[in-house]
Length: 356
Image (tube, rainbow, N blue to C red; front, top):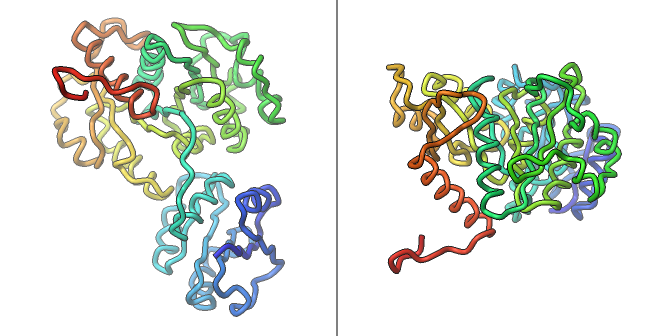
């Protein structure tokens, strides 16, 4: 089933579908049901209003339908997703990139999804939870393990700069938008703790101006320049970077705190609307040694439906830098080693005759 009838789809998305070897048949109006038999119907909310979803299913009874909801913002689209589910229509959330749509089509057609990239994404449950310092600690240990690492500051709504950096996401944006980054551009990145560092946007007023395709291109380009890309996507789902990061990361870590159980539940619920499940995330508990009497670590993990990857106590100099003690450092290095093995960057080693 390679024919895709489209209504209201932009030319860039059509080109991506054709590059993926799908035959696209753009329409100016809804086609006849017999015409699209044994094909896929891809619609957008720009042309077909949400109230018409039930009528669409009644008209195309046995045809796979994808509904791309184009109104940006996470608030309110859950009800649209529910309506689509009720009528067995595949919901495509706003901010989905063309390549993300291709993955969804492959899922509903039981085709193999192309898994690529080497981005490890860090997401916070709130500003100040420690997402940035945890991500930097991981980047530092990856570099110490001899890997070429790029660290990206992609928390667009809270870049965390005290001053305007010499190089930043904004400075490179014209080259990112034009998709003309060159290998030499990497040398302009800051060098920090053994890894390359691109600070985020210094102009936080431009946070909403960034497009998903720009972030997707940056991640793919960086992935070709380094063994590992570590990206801090922050804690704002309204961000284009957050949205692309949560789709494109090969490993997803949620930095949270024991008091953030309700925020964690909301984040996992949001992930379900973009075709992700809780078991595709792992939790990093920051300031785990602060007693709060709200929920236990086990209860937090069970409520979220995700496993705890590791935890860090509160350090005296938090939040400037994580300085693990010997025990925490050994534990972190073991975790780093397991990540490298899972990504095919290290070989398993034997310890007392057993593979670790």
